[in-house]
Amino acid sequence: MLKAPTTTETLTFALVEEGLRRAEASADAAEAHGSYCGLLCGLGNGAEAAWLADTLVESAADVPANAAVARQTGELLAALAASTRAALAGADMDFQPLLPDDAEPLAERVDSLAQWCQGFNHGLFVAGRIGDAEAELGSGNTAEIVRDFGEMAQVSVGDEEADAEGEAAYAELVEYVRVSVQLVYEELSAVRQRVESAPVH
Image (cartoon, rainbow, N blue to C red; front, side, top):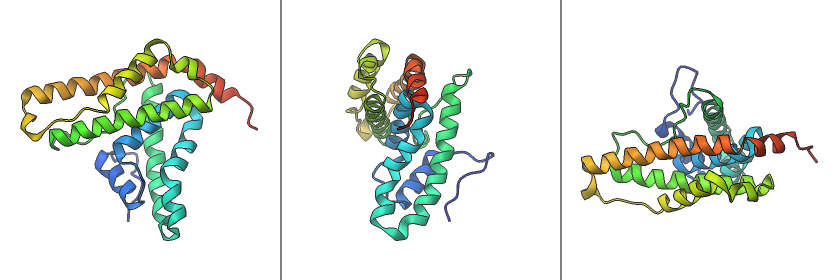
């Protein structure tokens, strides 16, 4: 039985991927985490509920027997959301995008990074609409990062390119994503404060 990890266990890509697969979610672990990070940058504390509903509601509604699995996966995703939120809000700058382990083939990792970037842009777009923050998303570093992530969402490599140079290029892209998300999170702090302080209708 799938269960949320304890505080001493690690929320790995494989664990989250397994949970999403069991719940028959439409997104894989990389895209789902990217989507949450985009929502989090724009919505703050309101991101988790929107993310869980978007990620799991279809599987639970379409197949009632999946409700228990969806609940277990929801607990796993809630733990991932909490750790991600703490990493982005913390002073240590230790945020990391959820991606396959480095032991996996480079082509698979690059594909997951592309999916992550696509998910982030989607989540940020949704957050912008919910928070009425399209202007903020279309200016400054955020706009440039969104464009870069859009290009990175199209990147792929063949197995023949899995060499030391390819590994180095991949590591640079991951680091760029890691730092960029932290930058967007900081740049949209006023948006989050506005959204979080808005009255609930």
